[in-house]
Amino acid sequence: MTALPPAPPRNAEELARAVARDGVEFLLVMFVNLHGRPCAKLAPVRTLDQLLSEGLGFAGNCAGGLGQSSGDPDLVAIPDVTSYAKVPLQEGLGIIQCDLYVEGRPWPYAPRWILREQIARLADQGRELKVGAEPEYFLVKRAEDGSIAVADELDTAPSPGYDAGAATRSFDHLSTVSRAIDALGWENYSNDHEDANGQFEHNFGYAEALRTADRVVVFRHLARMAAQRSGLVATFMPKPFGHLTGSGLHLHVSLWEGDTSLFTDPGDPRGLGTSKLGYSFIAGLLEHAPGLLALTCPTVNSYKRLSAGADTRSRSSWAPGYATYGGNNRTHLVRIPDTGRIEVRCVDAAANPYLAIAGIAAAGADGIARGADPGDPLTGDLEAAGAAAGLRPLPPTLLHAVDELARDGALREALGKVPGGEYADYYAAVKREEFAEFHRQVTAWEIERYLLV
Image (cartoon, rainbow, N blue to C red):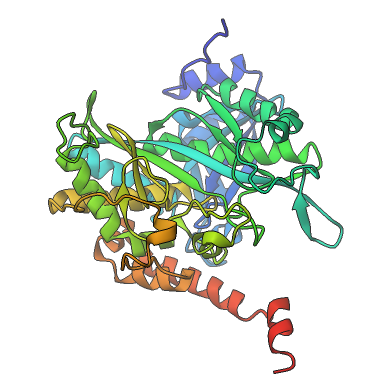
């Protein structure tokens, strides 16, 4: 029987013992910016006491997406000792996630603080949000001209989901990532080839919301490390290939009071085993979905995944087009696969996990506070019948979603205030500029279509 990994450290003394036990010589002192990009410095473990007491300074404008200019004081990254993990793929290296401060105060532009605030609000009500993540990504190779192709040249089946041959050919990569997840104590329980050629998913156990967000950040880093060692790229770009299904980050969400699941009701008259409070949480998600998408599908490319529909090779997008919910039906924005939890399917592979989970928590909490009800669940294939049913489509582009976010009072309040205004406006400004930069490009499609008009 494989020994269970040690419990995470709870304080500075336990962290010191853990890094010594693990033979760690350096720590990646890490945080993410608005875009979810991990930023870090490499700190020798011999500086651990100073690191924990004083933190490490960063030029916030250099990291980007953190509300700083070149003239602002340093961001100071203070490690959260409970987030420590030995990096299974690199001897002598550990990772620790940090909270950001400026001049001794929490920096409200930091996504980890934004999620912490939502967790604290739930804790004030005696509630805890738990989340499981299903990260998807493509394994690709890049040519000298910058173009990309599926890494496995034999992975060409029109419907490659769960393809045993493709999984076996990628065994070295998949097993390396699986062993790394298990070494971290995340309880990896499956690794599979997804619906698109070259697309994979790894599943691991659920945890408290902040811990799962940390794990998503570390997972992406590990998957990229493993791919790079084989001369490949693990990309979490939602839609790298126009003709293939895109990559999601489906989140399984449950709300707890102690050991009691607040989403569970065996006597549910709708037959889905979900409580009235759970339905109110779902209603909040559906009502706030247009603005929530700006956080859960945060790139220009994200909306090419959402609108793919039957244009993909497998004839399915596996992404919601409408703000709907149902039972064990993967065409909805919210799926109820089992009693006690819901699956939020409007999150894609590029999402900043801290902001996405914070938005989900806030939208659901607003639904609970108002006692909202989502109505009866819908059935059938929404990809095929959604428009015919008269349902309102989700925002078609990042720009539309950002405008919805800016108008959403509950999400605006959840994202909080920052120096000189509100984070929602800062986020919207960053994303509008991202869209504008994209819109200024002249593409090959435009040349082909309009050159001789």
